[in-house]
Image (tube, rainbow, N blue to C red; front, side, top):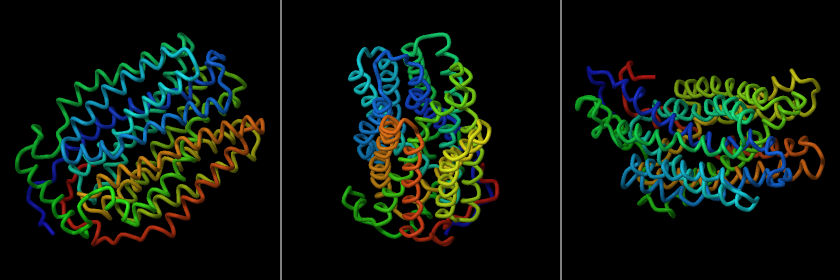
Amino acid sequence: MTDALPHPVPAKRWAYVIPVAAIMYMLAYLDRNNVSVILPYMHGDLALSNADKGLVGGVFFIGYVFLQIPAAILAQRWSARKTVLILMLAWGLAASLSGLVQTKSEFYVARFVLGLFEGGVWPAVLILLASWFPLRERARANALWMACLPLSSVLMAPLSGWMLDHASWRWVLVFQGLPPLLWAVVWWFTVADRPARARWISRAEAGHLERALAADEAAKPTSGSGSYLDAVRQRPVLVLIGVYFFWITGFYGFNLWLPSVIKELTHDGSATEVGLLTALPFTVALIVMIANAVWSDRTGRRRQAVAVPLVVGIAALLLGQAVDGALPRMLLLCLTAAALYAPYGPFWAIPGELLRFEVVAVAMGLINALGNLGGFAGPYLVGWLTDATGSSVTGFAVLSAFLAVAVVLVALGLRPVTRKERRPAVLTAEEGA
């Protein structure tokens, strides 16, 4: 255990690392999810059925799998900063070029390629944050960065809706792929891989952080060489893969079809109206997500911070299919969105608490890669079941069942982490966020 130094742990890292990383991933999430707003307004240009629309949303996650582990290893052993920069440039170009597709098959390929390049960004940034934020701050750091997910949807939905009222869906895709190419410049000159390499904090501050992070590592059990097999052999990794898969199936199944459900509630309102209303659930989700992470860091109750929101999400998702009236359904959509986003910060703090740094990179890549296959299953299942039954009710009920499995896995498969295990480094009160 390190002794607290007279100098506070620098707050600058919260102002430099988190916002730049959050905006970067907000742009990635925008390019990933803008299709959910665009699909109801494509006016049959590519002759997409509901199942086809689900496949458009889902095929992204097939590509998403391939670079997860390679990018995690590159981020750990080479440079998270450079890895993200390369992927940012690649996905920006892929997103813009997707506006040029002429057939359904080309659209599938474009979404696959976009997923391929976006896939490596998530684990690379988690590795970056693990080099900047000790364990006692990790859920807050993760949640503040991951707040870009609902925030991106808050901004993306009305922006995309407004653009669709004034331009073709093709131009929306082209223009929304350009910001990552510009943000890459900010990323390159602001972000550093480790405190010791940052120009904007003193050596004393960097040393303080490095010692706190080293104390965290020393308190963890040893776990092999950091290979793929070492990660697979870790029981918590297998459980976390299962939790993430079933959770993400429900998460993306809900997210992709949310604008379509709201469009029905507005009786085919304009794209701008639908976009503005779609932003409301994500605004609630943003607030709840950060609050849940703060509570998780203060109490150390990671499992509860993951499982309890998912239970609430299951109830809200099912009730939303049973009630009538636009206002009650809208309130339940807000509650569902909040519940599905809330576990993000605590969930991604768990691998860093249970695994050493040399294996956590591969583990995070593996969890994200295999778990995000649920991003294919959820949207496609809802689309296919909507075509088969003529209603989204059955699809959303199936999503609830997937979320229930995630809750069971959290409750029975993950052991609690004690305060002694998760807080070996003593930091001063002025630790940032």
